[in-house]
Amino acid sequence: MEDHVPLKIFIVYAREDAEALRKLQAHLSPVTISERLKVWDDGEILPGQHWDNEIKTQLQSADIILLLISKDFFNSKYIQSIEQKEALERHEAGNSVVVPVIVRPCDWEDVSELSKFQALPENGDAIFSRHWHDPDEAMVSVAKG
Image (cartoon, rainbow, N blue to C red):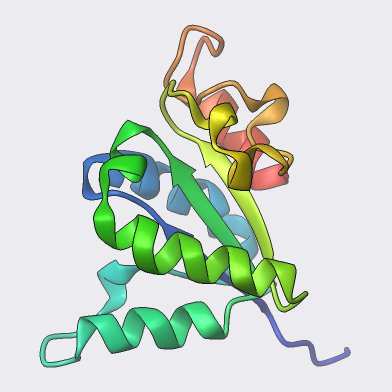
């Protein structure tokens, strides 16, 4: 069997979307168990660690950066000034892939930096919206994407 290095996924989310983060982590668990992916979010920062440095270090080593998009994502100054900015710079440099994941309905398509990306779940319909009968269906779409 061939050794492989798992892809590192960094998840950017607003605290208000922690429920969506937990659900997404559960849906990604089959590929994390198989060690094809290593998923990281700021919930893994240990007591005593410098949180800003740890976030920046993890972001710098990510292969894939998932942006959990909602009104709260856009309302976070830290996300906008640090995480999203770095994610887009890494994508433009070819060092990582940015994938917007639409969590809740919001006007994300008017944000020129993000509207150029193909979003998940399919059709860019928000996970927690009337477009999905069950949010788990949307999460499966994200996990497969």
